[in-house]
Length: 368
Image (cartoon, rainbow, N blue to C red; front, side):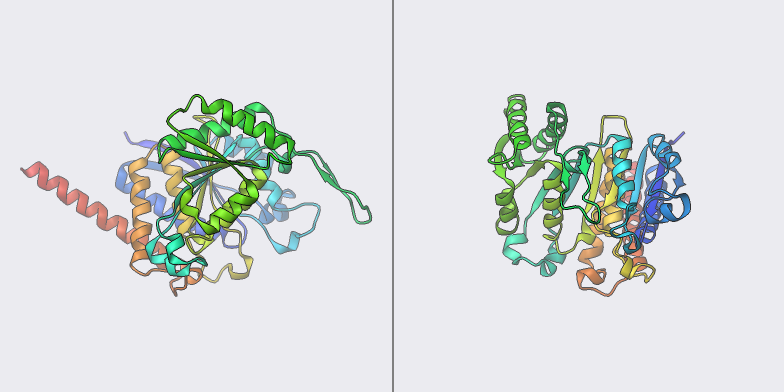
């Protein structure tokens, strides 16, 4: 009997339903080719949930997320709620907190087919292969807030970190570096910020358990400069929530478009992970069939690898996306003319061809 998995789909707002739909097609194809089954539940999140349910994410949806094997999210955000007291993005923060996903993994790798579309010179971008590990459930985003209101002249956001919060995300980063090129860059602002000094102390203490990993500390302003000056100096970057949010969006432009960047948000082993493309909801192009589905499809690959343990299927999807871009199937954000449907079909076709080739090779070997 084949393994069966339960995935909660949260298409969200704007182009979210389009790219999640594409990722679902690819997941279904992978399930059929690699011998597992996927059961889906689809629910609202973001602006659509505010309109229909009165909140950016309902308690019922949070319960469904906790009961799934993994969650695939499209994007949340809509200009109708900009500046309002209830924002679609609050649902995402609540979801992350409910799932206790404390480590956000954002891989950034150059693609030769996309190098011309990077804002940086080809010699700077070529060969880039780094991973940003962002702490996701602490820091300023989750600290106590004092709102200024419409007429006030003071507002504040508290930034709080504990040693355990730092240690657990740093361990994820050390393990990732150990499995890659053995170099970890911890980014902070320890020359000014008290929580950064705690961050640096805890990371240094944990480093004793990883003598095979080279550790360096870089201030966040310098890290931002190095990402555009010499991004190849990085292997794995670990940093706190706010810094990670900013640096990962900066790094997302290295390959040429945020439409190519997936992400995985992970918690304790055995708990459901949250997977989503890095890009936003892009309501200005929603419904036009021009959205880039590659980041959502690659997020589905991360879901297969990290939450479901289906690494072979994940590899196949990533290879299919790579070949599709190499073959010139590029959406508008990448300088091409392909739409969402064409890009999705290209990935599915390559997966089918690869599967047929592998099956033929297997039959030949068995015949011998």
